[in-house]
Image (cartoon, rainbow, N blue to C red; front, side, top):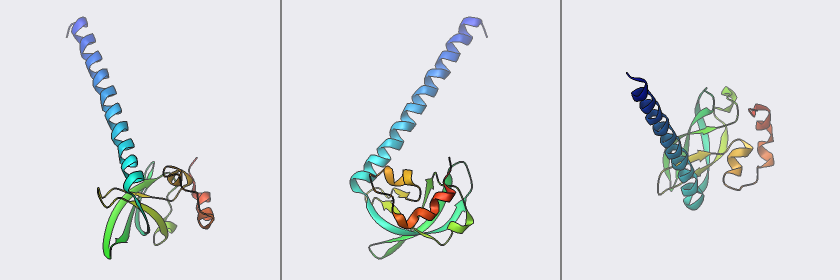
Length: 127
């Protein structure tokens, strides 16, 4: 590949990557806007945890008498102690989007005050 063609290819890859990042950020923000607009605060019970950079929590909850299941991330550290624990959940009946509320940052996304009843979770907070 010639030098000029290689430079054009590198610019193309960089532009494609930037566009991908912008679309991802916009989509992520739109999910939270939709949840803020149409979300319903419900209790949920954690059923499983996948340990990763941002912990993935599997949970079950009820909406209009129907048992539903979901997965969501939180910045709070992973602990098997969380399995079986109950936490608030923001759920959009329109889109099916969910966000579990465990860490203070989760509550901040929805402009909700962090409850004193969850202060025990702070020791698991990731920095």
